[in-house]
Image (cartoon, rainbow, N blue to C red; front, side, top):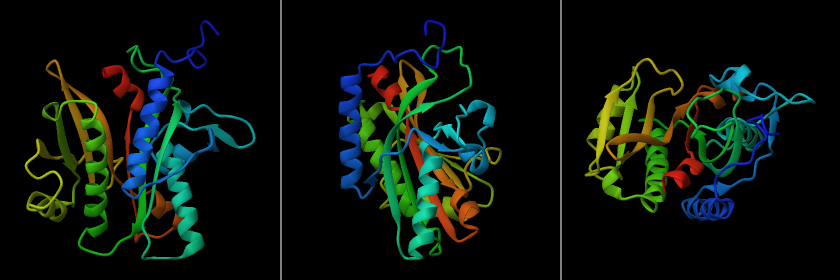
Length: 251
């Protein structure tokens, strides 16, 4: 117990952390994200099969399971299951959760622990053309997370960066010229990022400027996980997350 980093308690205040979880889940629910409580376990290979997480960084368990290391991967499974059952191509399914992740990789930075609490959002639906799903969910996720972070930090210290992938030129033009978008007149940047293969077309990050250092607080974008799970290239999935425990520490 003394030497194993996977089993030692967190140094965070659990009361404040639980209060923050409840506040954030309630706000997300008001924005249309249904709160969902995930199991501590997922099917073996959940992260490595649909994402880019190496199985060596996931804690494997018995009975064909692994300890959850990324809640958005599990929510992708649930969203795919819902759509396969309902067959409703007009529906948009949105989930929010808080979860204590366990990661196997070792970090020298003491702020990066083997287990930590995250706040995650996931939205699934079908393509309706003109990047409509991606644009609407980008707005939903960014505005939700930005508002929640602005309750903890000064808005003047928050900035948004959009990273566009190769082939997303039209999407970039639509986002840059949308005067009604949530991020209009906020501290934003658009950048090209063709090397990161985790997200399909766009990634966003929300940074905190703390003592001259840019700290990555929130991250999200569109992924092709449900396309793989459902064998349907028309399906879309948008995910995002915040290290809630990191927010508490920085606060």
